[in-house]
Length: 304
Image 1: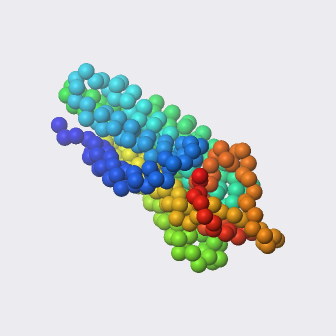
Image 2: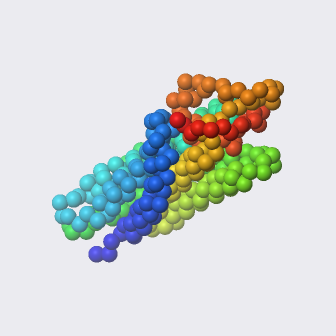
Image 3: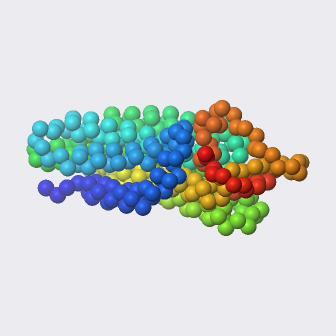
């Protein structure tokens, strides 16, 4: 019996995830572990480590040759994996949303619009996933792995929702990048926006590929790229946060801020309890300071 094509794709995805983890682990230790635990760092750890769990479970499902495992067992295991993947994508999307809110300087209209859009997207996605899981069917013969026999195409609605969210985020990020790059000569800030947009476009293209596979591919290939998309969310969102924290570590540890109306350097206004709890600071860099302030770099370490 030839293994399902899903297993090859998942193994390749796990290899990619492991490689990325190995080359960025040092950064994680230096930049994230030293920070106090907040909502922002919690999101980082979730998006960073959840893929290892659901990828391992996926491999287990598609390499289970035991005659004791039934088609119902396959469905139960895939439901668990799908729930974990959905949580992972929702966490990654939330990171992208918070990053967008941060670079737009927490403007009320952006916060409300993206907040409402995100929760509508999550609610609709949960409903779609429930319908999809109810329709999922496997065939399981003794000493053969789980093979998908039926997938409801309702799942394509979920990918459309993801595409829409990513389009909005890319659009807002691109608009902010155009505004800021005209006013800055900082190569780092230009690189940050360029990489951010490239990362978003890669995630967007992964969603398009999954949508096309779901609509036109045979049953056994419809879900072959879902693990790759979910892992791409994890890798790229983690890299965005690590890139921002690395830049913060390089510039200056403590920032004092002066408004355009005040010629005396003074400490930046304290953040609210909610902002501190959310740790939105983890999603934006010092180079992206609000346009009505000027920053002065002093000695010390950021985040201490």
